[in-house]
Structure formats: structure tokens, C-alpha cells
Image (cartoon, rainbow, N blue to C red; front, side):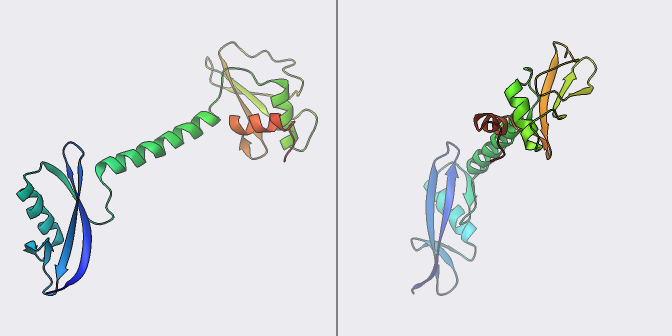
Length: 172
């Protein structure tokens, strides 16, 4: 009898070792591994195969199905990307420089003062605006303040701000 279909399943041992288990479907519809362990279910054929191997298998994976380790790796990468974005928008302790304020002012289409710097004191948790491109005049932020800059579309990421300052604040 000839094979009608082949599927590559995987078996993962407790120590992380991954084994490929190539199954063939016979003309009578049964799945086998190298001609042995016939079953109507490919998962059952894989299970019978790994039991015969006496392997400590913790996962049996259908074709294309990710393992727990792969899912964990992908989740961790996604969480790291989210953390990087959060950090890029998080308020910082250092007040913005004159160049940073001017760069954000240019996002607003102005070369002069615009309300773009916000600071907050942890003591009160309130945000206060400052809008002088030459630095803070009339406002002295407390020592425990944190700062953000705002463009016309909302908060400006620190990485975007660095690019704007490097470009001389041009919108480019």
C-alpha cells in the first residue's frame, strides 16, 4: 500500500529535546510511523511511538503547532517590545534641554514658545505645563518632578525626540 499523506509531528521531552515524528497515512486511512503503530488518529500514533521509545515526553505537537518553549519565547519577546515602548514614553527625571523643547516646538510648526513640556511632582501627582523654548521661566519644578514632552499628536517618544534634536528639530 502506498502513502497518501505525510505529516511531521514533534515530541518534546522534559529536558527540552525535540524529536521529529514523520507519520504516513496509508491507503486504508490509518496513520503509521515507519509502518508501525497504526491508528486512525495521528496523535495516537505519535503517542504509541514515543511510549515505545521510553522517552519522557511532555508535549506532542501537531504540524505547525508551537511548543510551550516557543510560545514562551515569543511571549517574552512581545513583552520586551512592549516594555521598550513603555520606557520610550515614560516620564523622565531630567528636565528637557532647550534643544529638546525647541525641537518639539517645531513639531507644532513654530519656532517660538509652545506648550509642550509637562512636569509632575510625585508629591501632588499633578501635571503642570511649561511653554518657554528658552527653558523654564517663572516655574521651578520640584526636585522630585518627572518630565514629558508633547507634540500635536500627543506624547513624544524619547527616541523620536533624539532624532528631532539630531535633525535640528526639523519635521523631516
